[in-house]
Length: 434
Image 1 (cartoon, rainbow, N blue to C red):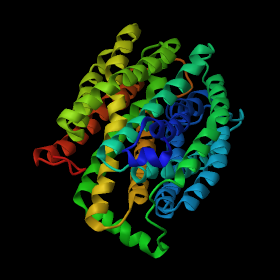
Image 2: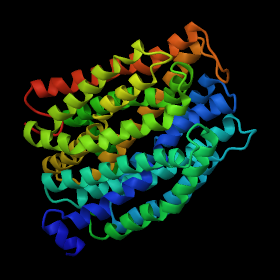
Image 3: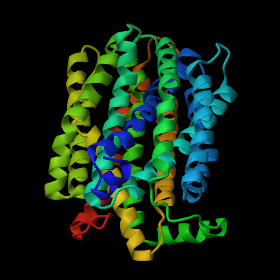
Image 4: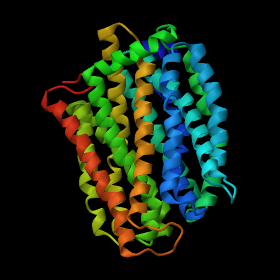
């Protein structure tokens, strides 16, 4: 069946495969950027933790404008293809600076690499996410495309995580980053070619003048469902970013189990892949919002066990990784499906196709959460007396690391649960679901 035939039929498996596969490639930088790059620049290159966090946050701040501008521009096949063509080389160059840093690399090097990486990643992801709303004809098709994309994103994350383990280099951050960059370079053409080929099949709604950007943005934020979903999504992403930033330091200095790092990541993400069909089944019966609330609450409950662990508890932490990983697939697929659903509801209410712009602002929220979470986590351990680049730390520094890794993130996740639950209590979800 052709792509257009798949769309007319509600989105077939071939369309889901072609749409979702770029997610595997775009996920490859995720684990290195969140877990390995900050730890390498802090523990490996000896830069101050708080300064590394501020450099990442500053790069994100400059990158924030890219998403809404790209989202507004992404309203035709030609413009979507232009964004893709600009994004691929930027992503490759930026990750080269971050994953293959010189021994003398400092904060300016880190800042330049992070900025190029995130701008390139935005220019590739905005068209992909917009395609998820403009290719699908109904809620079922949108959920199928979102699930395919998020499933491949998890698979890509597992692939990037497993490569250093299989190569026997999981305990060497520098070597792991080298391997992961070459994997990204080899597969990046897929993330360019597949969305490029699908762009002509989407219903983009036509180009719009740049003067419409601010009015359309104000219209989006004037819609309470959009604001509520964005708020819950931001808080949850913030809660996820902090432990991701500190995982390597926690495993190395609190658990004293650096050699287990690869196993922890594979266990966590593998559990997410295996559990995703169950979450989709639950979402069909309880609704997207309630299923997402349950996944967040489960992750928060499990992570409350982490402050009880210490040296010698490597196996116990592996069980925590498996249990908390159960929610990772739902944490990605369910909010994403709600976002696509909300974009359609807003279009039906306003008569304007703003899927690209809506996903752009969700991209802004993601970036703010990831950069803000990293900056906050690194600032907390720095203020708490954790000294980077040393083999051992005093109890005060380790306590600060545990609080920033496992306690503060749980508070943010519970706040996201509360915000989402308020909508469930009203009988409607942010995406208009009853």
